[in-house]
Amino acid sequence: MPSKEEIFKERLAMVMLDANGPDAGGDMALLGSLADRIVSHAGRQTWSAFKANLSLEDFRALLTTFQNQGNALAKQGAMAQMHAIEVLACSLIAKTQAADAAIAADDKALNRYIDRAIRMHRGTPAPDPVIS
Image (cartoon, rainbow, N blue to C red; front, side, top):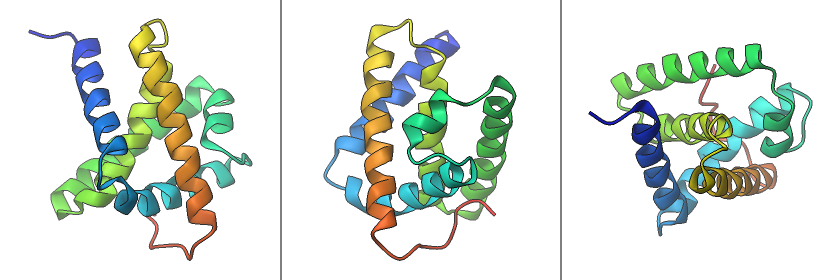
């Protein structure tokens, strides 16, 4: 049976494939909207800065929110919104596994992807929020 770290590494690899795939642009609007809402609420300009300053308590609370909202969205069939939450959740979790060189590299790339989504979002009208 694979460990939780191995399962996460596989999931992160899938998220990275999606982020670098031909359909990545369509998901960036939702991702940018959600990430911007979170970082703006925290008084940060970027996802990278937000993550760097996130307390353990806030980390845990945000992961719980992501899990609850993601599960609810999946039940509703709102897969694009659920995927945006999954990308952010993977980014948060990756921070905790920085000792693994592959995860650390993917974490940096994912931070850049999320920051790019935020910049793109700020230049466009906001879609409906993912998390209420």
